[in-house]
Image (tube, helix red, strand yellow):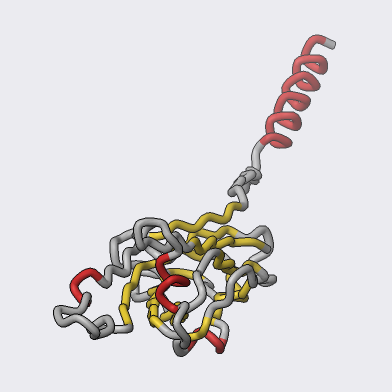
Length: 192
């Protein structure tokens, strides 16, 4: 009887040991990547300075009625569902005085950009006239991407400021009494 119990105990051990042995093992990994969107401008303040264009002879106008400036808009975006690519960048300009016109052209990011950086709206492929207090989408269809963070990475924003208008009030409109300065603001917003 002792021999039978020992054999049964040995058989039970070998059965339970073989149930734990396997040629494969599976482990689940939970990977959590947050969704986020962010933008930044390489230069937060641009100055269009006409000081050097002041007339040197009485009776003359500004020597130049146009100024150019540029900066870069950087984007980081992680969509929850990349196939949707429904993130966009829009802008709203405010406080551009009468007698001035401001145009914006947007150029695509360079080689450091990775992912789905979206499409520049066709209006902004060439210099496009901005209007006060009007929201304009400039880039749409943005998916998961980043544009790079070096000084010349991102969407190239090229501005053209023109002194325009007619009539005797043009320079009063431009100067507006604030030490001949015009404080215009453009707000860029990334959203989906």
